Image 1 (cartoon, one colour):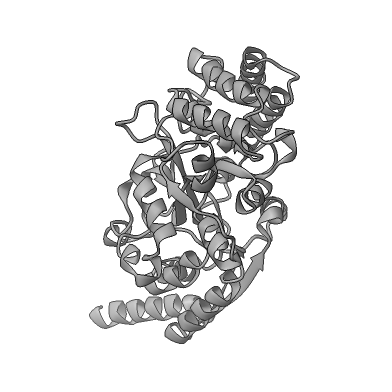
Image 2 (cartoon, helix red, strand yellow):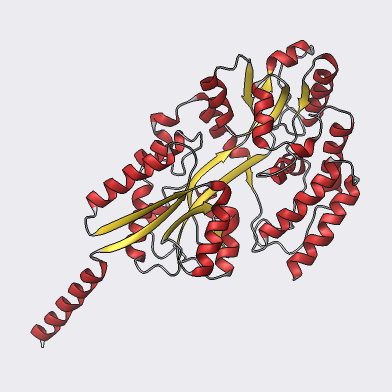
Length: 410
């Protein structure tokens, strides 16, 4: 009997090995810049060398079309095994049964390599469907040359100071005081800076909220703050025609005194040779002695529910988190690593990255919801109506909540 049992066990191990041997996995990654593809190609080559029984098919695509690509792939069942995307899309994928929870597949000591705040922010209903892949935090950029011309010698620490500085710059120079993004990617997030610091929120809960709260006093006050800046002419003209990159170009050209964005702008200013004296500092708060709340962003990597090679896919996900691979593509993209160990790499020891790292403790992550896309579209529409003068702050916020609550219920 012992020999029979041993034979059966041997056959079982052999069968398991054969099932794993020769596995092929697809890895789909959106491009974060020129460094993404070569960095992942090197990562894949190293992984295949270390795991000769696993082959990796790498797919690198454009961020602008990434959401549509994933939706099409999921619908057809032709999605990759390992999928990189953003945290905000996770609830809809989970609701559709497209992702495999990772809790039981990843060793606890591996998960411990990540800051708890990132892991917790990536969970849905208490389960880890998204392993953080890259993070960042936003800073306030201030053109000190323009502020000096306006008689100001320091960057604003409060929103009231920012408004006063924007007024002074507009009145005493040819530049705009404060830039407000009015369209496209992250347009709604630009409103979160003032909304959060005034104590407001989009929904009553960060994850799976069931009630819009934009029509609370804090939401209307935040909308009124931006509305006031626009109507008094302290922002760039025609706010709704500017996306993030448009504002960054204004700032590079010395035509905009202040804006909030990611660390890559500082890198671009240096590499492109723009002759402006600027500081990259904290987002303003409500009082000088307390740092403001900023935006924290998490992108993530997922395991497909329909993957036929889950063990191999998880092995690749863990391999990709080695510090040297994070440094190779994340630092070059002007973003931040997701593991504590990777943060010690020399590649991240740059002033513009350190400024973002310093902002992380005050970062807040956006809400996630199965109907996030619909909710954001509604908010964007109402913000554009506000910014273009078609709606009052109260009309915009109450109108947004009316439609958002309807979308949540249906």
